[in-house]
Length: 312
Image (cartoon, rainbow, N blue to C red; front, side, top):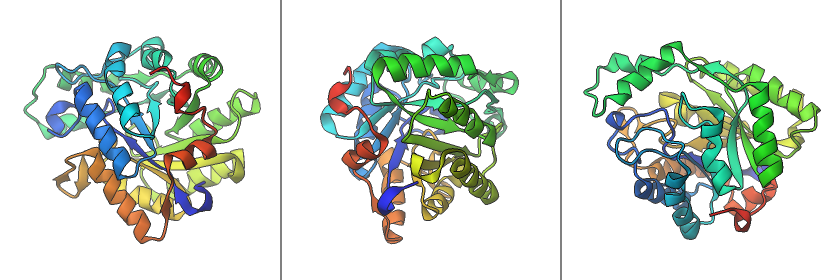
């Protein structure tokens, strides 16, 4: 839960869901990713969730060298917590998905808590004029695809990154069963509080963006973990983003926005930057008399190792 009324804002800067044709504002190159991440931090994001893309065609890449082109610049320009994906891009092996994090040894990484259908193919119904051949193929592939996060995979990440690098995790839970998977690792002593539970709504294959589901995920997380042992955060895909995370914040949660999760600022209006989305949710939260947590406050609440102990 958000402690003392101070909300941690996470910004997911580019992700691996949206493709270049969908928005001209999606950060692609290392310079664009760095600039957008820095702007998001300046707007109020305490955590920056980062993927890498091939700077030539915008496709997701696991290449640690690409990560290292933007991570140092972001660190030099902001005190925000850098959170590197271990989800990577759909179709990557677990080792590929973790390559950037293993090189960079960040304070945080994401960690998906279960295998699932991850359907992006409905985007093809929009009949876009694709800039790159890989884009429609990538989306179509998800019609017959399982995003694999087995118990063995999760154990490996907890050992290699958690034990080996002192990394703490953004536990991404796309359904109720993922909360139970996390509870399994807590019961085994492989995950210790305080932990950061990111409940995710609106991905085809995961739990839907219905307010009943938001309440249920909160109830089950409290039952499984105890309210005092975890920080709760909420994200919702696409058009549900702003309204859903606002509701979550009213209920005491932290929030995640960013162009990974939605390309829009409002109905029919593309967000021109991640900073615009962060500024909007910050304004909404402050209008509700909620304070925004600083990176230092978020570090303390999440028991992170600190920016001086990363490898970039």
